[in-house]
Length: 119
Length: 112
Image 1 (cartoon, rainbow over the protein chains, first blue to last red):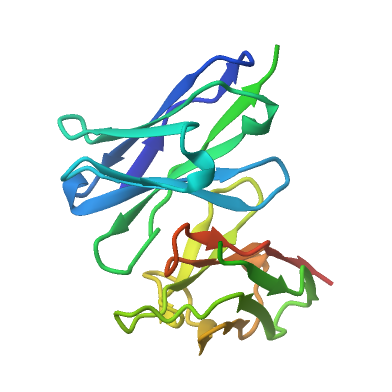
Image 2: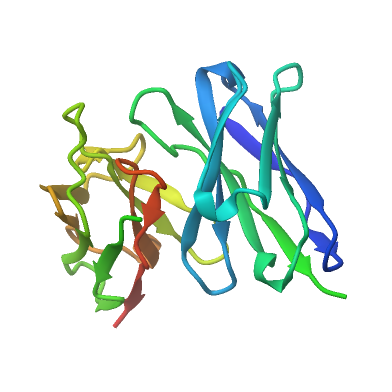
């Protein structure tokens, strides 16, 4: 069974950073890219970027360059996203979703991590 | 960035009714490789999005065949032939032809 298990919800101070994880199971981790998507409270969806774990290549939405950093650990089948210099605008739910190298994108999603930025 | 405009923003339906959602793109989504990277998702309350359709009209694994997608270029449609209670939630289209990938604003399907 394919599963993307994300880490727990976070409460963080303004100006701090947060790093969340997305542990993949049930498939070959390096056969798929991992994408990250932001959903602000009561809002729609924004694509943040993607990492190809096989070759450690990343691609970012220009809007999130300097804000998000994507990494992956092939030994533990885990993708990570770090968000830096947090502000209230970063309070949102963040999802990971896998995408094969074919066009069958986003067939599985993680359960989401709610990040709340508050002093 | 490519803007995807979904209409309507709210859709009220009765169980068994057939409904359609439109997704219009600010640019053609036909890629140079011949594919059109247009997807449809359903997000039920309190859940992660679930993919329904990929490449305009391909039904995802395990997705009921009452869902169908159509369209080309800049105009796309998701149709539900006979709404069921489990179909309620917010529907999103997404394009992956042009970077950055973008989502439509969503269509909320509710019971009339």
